[in-house]
Structure formats: structure tokens, C-alpha cells
Image (cartoon, rainbow, N blue to C red; front, side, top):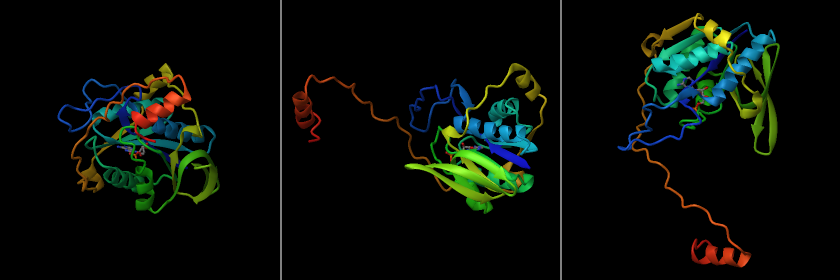
Length: 249
Ligand code: AMP
């Protein structure tokens, strides 16, 4: 069984992002980039399925500029067998990304596609759902457990107030939540080996997909700065401040 994991290159989660002075987006110059943390969990799950003998091949795919090869090499060092870069603009909307992923799914025919539940740059939480809708496959989102048996997969989902288990017929789409697994670190020998693993580059044109978007970003701005908190000495003082300063009661 072939498993595909979709990974996105994003600003490293340790970086405090800054908005460009002209308000056209986030300043990415000299900023450390990394694999989206939820995508690391997707790759880890795919690699574990291979180690358990459930998956025979793990293919990782990203949509983005050539710089995203770095994250594909990381995924290869973590245990993926081969990688596909769909070379396109870094700021494509979710629907365009989902259409491109659908074209790759049609070409590769994986039985399971694992994505992160959300990318920490745009926080969209929609690409996996869109891919499921476009491909007509069942979806198990926010997965905390994935168990394959025969031609179906049981996905335990994190939902408000508990967990829900859904059974999906393969092929299926899964999106990862934090508790699914703890991703490994790549060892130096595996980083060296990953350099020799196959990395194919495709284009939207070759896949027959238009990336024209109907959405336009008008302006990006940083959240308003908040003043520091204070400690009050008594409940009476708290009530007085809530009433007269914050004016919320
Ligand atoms: P989002 O819907 O943007 O929050 O992203 C959810 C997940 O979709 C990510 O964790 C990735 O697995 C996948 N994804 C989003 N954008 C891309 C991209 N450009 N290339 C590959 N996978 C992506």
C-alpha cells in the first residue's frame, strides 16, 4: 500500500513573525523556514506504517517554490522513500493547493493521504478537507490514532469534549492532530542518505491544473499591541478597575 504525506514549508514556529511595512504580507527575508509541525506528524505516521509493514512506499509531496526542496529532503531523511515538488508560488490559496494535490493523487494512486490539520502560517485548516471533497474520498480529520485493517482505516478524531472513531474505506484522507505521534529527529547518516533519494519536480501546467485564485489579500496587519497586565491587591480593587478602567462591568 502506498502512503502519501503532504508537507508545507512554513516559517519556523520559534520565529516571531513581522508584517512588512507596506502591509502586503509577512516579511520572509532572512527568516528560518521549517516543515510545518503537523506535517512532521503526517510524515512520522506514514513512516511508522511502513515500519509496521502496512505501507510499502511513502511518497512526500509539497507545493511551493524550489526552496521547499529543503523540507522534502528533511522528510526523506525521516524515512520517506521519494519526494515530489510541484513547483509553484509559495502563497497559493488552499483550493489551488488542493487541486494540485488531487492531480498528484490521481497520478500516484496512494491508498492513504496524510496531511497536517493546519499550516501554522495561514492557520487555514482546510486543505485536507478540500482534497477529500475533490477526490471523493472519505476524510478523518484531527486524527489522534490511525489503524489500517484490510481495505479500511479506523481514525480516532479529536473532537470537542472527547474522541470519535470513524471508519473510512480506502483510499482515504487523514489529517493529523498533535497527539497522533511524536515525530523523530533525523539522524546524520539518514540526512546523508536522503540526498540520494529521488526528488521529482512537476509543474501545475504538466498536471493540467490552473492556479488562478479568486481570492485576493487586501492588507496584512499585526495585531494591536496590548498593555502589560497588573496584579491587584484585593477583590475590591479588581472590581473597581473592571468598572472604572476596563469599563467591562
Ligand atoms: P492548511 O489547510 O493550509 O491549514 O494546511 C493543512 C495541511 O495541508 C498542511 O499541514 C499540509 O499537510 C497541507 N498543505 C497545505 N499547503 C500545502 C502546500 N503548499 N504543499 C503541500 N501540502 C500543503
